[in-house]
Length: 159
Image (cartoon, rainbow, N blue to C red; front, side, top):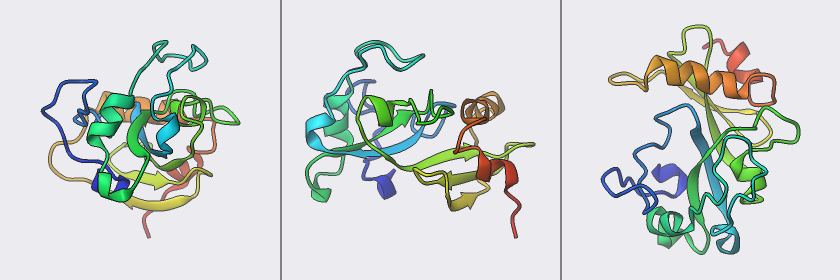
């Protein structure tokens, strides 16, 4: 979270800056940095699977590290990222690019890659300890499959 300009706030209520869901489920796997004037944008219904409204601005303000300047960051939903151009929350609601996207790698979904907005490799990992449920890891990959962000995960072979 810190690498993306966010505080770790797992115990505050949802909608008020809670980051417990960030990178811990299938969809909240984009780190999106944005300008201050768009952080209060709402979904007008153009993002499939996202509630109309989807007001995130107040939570973004609370969770974003103020020392990094105006604007903010959030772990946004990847729904629609398999289209070209991407139709996810970062690109549609916030008119932003993703700093990085976490994608779990098939076939065992025990490793992940981080890719940039163009789908290019940034880093990878194989976490230990408690992982997100396997259902969520597989579904994360299913949400990117067929788009630019799946390519690295599908071909990833640790050297």
